Image (cartoon, rainbow, N blue to C red; front, side, top):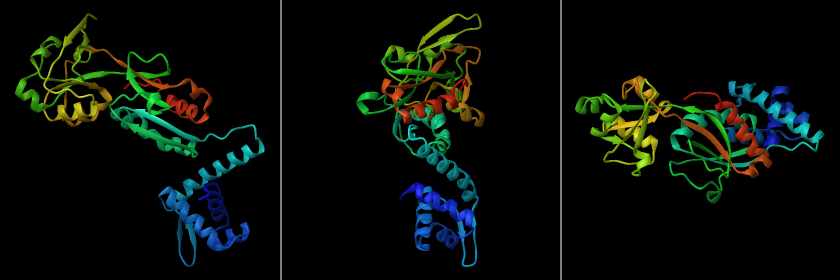
Length: 296
């Protein structure tokens, strides 16, 4: 399907008031108009026009898409008028941890697609931190305090951590009275090495407290840790945005609220080549504008 042609035909249908009138205006047979409209609806996955033997009218989605298609066609016509201006198009491969991608990236993708309809996104969510270059990724969303200096980093925002446990775990093992009491509890941690097991706090006097936690289960997945924590298998340290709904619903309870945990930072990483690729630049600037200067 020629998407631009189908969009132009749909706009003509809306302006002329019928498919037959649009066909006459465009100088094509009715079947061409009908075929392009059907293919456009299949591509979008939504109905644009109510059809009957006597009349035709736009659906609610049709009215929304009408203005969107007009903007796209005007933009394309502008590019034809100014051949030095490049169209933003191409494939951009993005990688992110599962919980970060689901919570922070996915909700903004529909609007990105409306703004950049010719940019294809390949979003891969994984808690295995792939090598960006080896795996062919263009952009990565990462949560860390230490980053690979070989990539360009755009810092988005700070994210806070909270310590949580399920009501079942608390009823069985009690509530730790201080960070140091965590050594007597089952903790769900992201790895077996010391740095991954060590949780860092500050007390009300701003004094640093470092605790080496331990438990019977290690996993590199924040989403899995949350699920195991809700099942009562231990105490977890997780990003606040990941457990906010579970705390509100009562599935999890925040522990040690008087102790501050070390925050981490959200970054978008991309390679130097991304500064010359319009599609990659569009992805980076779009998500920076949506996610910067917010606290999670």
